[in-house]
Amino acid sequence: MDLFSPRHLLIVLLIVLLVFGTKKLKTIGADLGSAVRGFKDSMRDAEQASNPDQPAQPQDAKQLAGAPPSAEKTTEKPTPTPATDKAADKVTHA
Image (cartoon, rainbow, N blue to C red; front, side, top):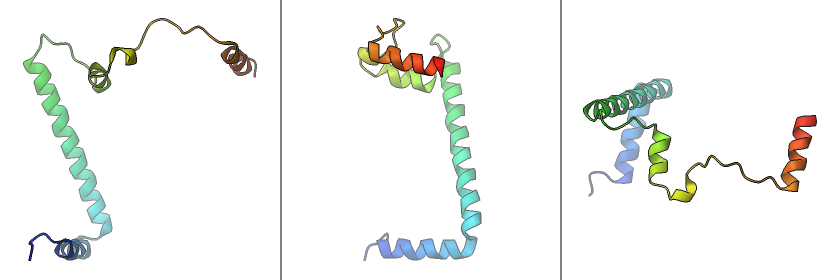
């Protein structure tokens, strides 16, 4: 028999649910999630403090760094088409 079979895990989950209750488990989960989030933030801050020559990047910018160049934001405005001009007129005149 396997120690972590689905049947054993289900029995352990039911016992934990009976002992703590759903409300207590919900608060424990929320507290654990905020603790992990705080730990990740402090690790990121420590990493940025150890590398002061690199500018701090928000998480979204880090994700865009791995994206192809076509996904980067451009400063040029796209040329409006007649369909978008009509939609813009409806929004501004409504």
